[in-house]
Length: 171
Image (cartoon, rainbow, N blue to C red; front, side, top):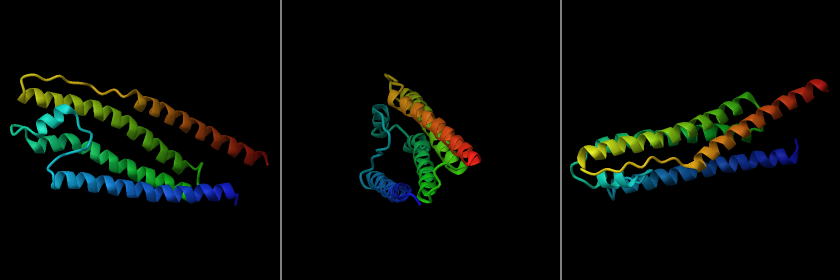
């Protein structure tokens, strides 16, 4: 086997471990913040913080607003682990890796839509409690650029797979 492929396989294994460690650190940090300090520090807007610190707001509703983002984090980690697992096995251009990669793209798209939806729902809830509410819809152009870049990479991976298959047929 090519030494560069072996190196990529080892790096993929290392990244799998690093992703799990980073996820554990984030979950522990969020758990500590919530359980010990009674604060929620997961993608929080100023409206959300104002609601969280107000006695009139229902914290269960606020947690429900944030739950989809937290679930998306775990689904993303799952698909990233699966993708890196295939890479660790040396399967860089198989159908399964493309499926994982497409899931990651769709999750990123869903995350952008979810951020906008959460801002609107939080703003609506804030408006039901406070007299003055100014809703800011987060449209992060870096996220849009990332999605477009991921789509270009998916296209390039698919094209590379087709070229590899043509080369095999030619030989």
